Structure formats: structure tokens, C-alpha cells
Length: 158
Image (cartoon, rainbow, N blue to C red):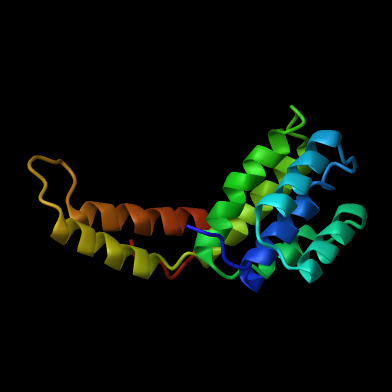
């Protein structure tokens, strides 16, 4: 399947990754290779490549770039790439870890738990479970507890 153009949402995912390279205040050869390969492999426009090249030399605000990634699927994809990127130099620096945790928390805050619970209901309706100690209600309760514990929401129903 040929790659199509990079949409703005996905472009910001890449810009966030390029910004992550600067998190530890040193851009290493392995990180430059990672970025150069991305620009060769993915169908960026000339304008997008010019912006990404600038991002290599001029650090951008990581959280600001991440806020422009609207799709939860692209955010999840970002974390896969980011995990590879932070380890590409063989070290996971404190600055990188702190930023990753902040971004993960922002990602989790965007999750629509009610929609997720509805999707779980559909999966349980489609799937025939022979023997299980967990009912769909157990899973819903677990998600509600997770939401309450992680977000400390007073209005979360337990």
C-alpha cells in the first residue's frame, strides 16, 4: 500500500518527536539518523521537510507540539516511536523521562472512558466467553476505579 501525504495531525506527531530529540539538550548522531530516515521514508511535502529541518536545529516546545496531535491513535503511535527514539542513543535521560510522563498523562486525560466502556460492552457481546471470573460489569468497574484513582475525580462513579 503506497504511503499517502502526511496530514497536519500526523505532521505534529513527527514535530513532537523531533522536539523530543532536544529534551536532554544534546542531539546525538543516532538521533539525527532517526530523523533523516523518517524524512526519507515518509511522504512529507517539501514545506514539511523544511519545517522538520528547522526543528532539528531549533528546539520547539514539546508539549505545544503534542497538543496539536488530535488523534488518540496518533498519540499512541507517537509513544511507540518516542520509546525507540529516547533509547536510540542507549540512554533514557531524566529530562526525556519527565517529558514522556507529562505527555502520557496528557494522553490519558484525553481518553473518553465512557466511549471505551461502550466499546468493551460491544466486544463482550461479540465474544463468547466459555469460563471467566470477570464479567463485563467487573471490567466497567475496574475502568471506573482506574479513572477515579488516576484522575482523583470526585464525580467519578465507583
